[in-house]
Length: 126
Image (tube, rainbow, N blue to C red; front, side, top):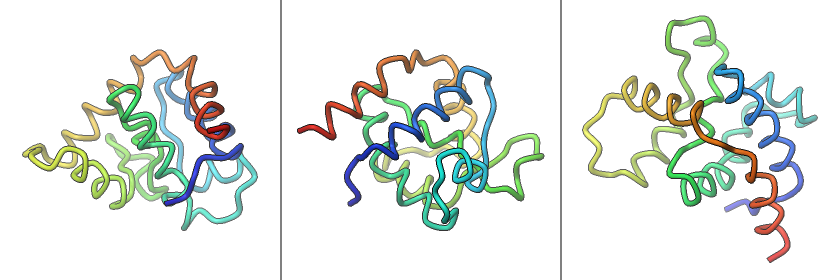
């Protein structure tokens, strides 16, 4: 598993802004925002950050990062990796992928993320 590093602080700040504005961002847009050049591997980079937000807040912040081909849909969808992680943490869930995304996104928009960068810094320095 990738460990948290300063890139995750940059990613968190972008996702915190998305949450504040009740919007999603594509993997490609997120990569441009944080200077990371591989949208294909961004899911793996998001992994430790998402696990941290689930541990600390009970919410998967990466629900805000969506596949570009779904960005203009009524319900933009994250990649398959997001759902694999969700089911790893909530194995008994009988919700559809759409329901998972709607519930997690709503929780993400309502969450106060102000302490997230400090939580990441604390994890990095351990």
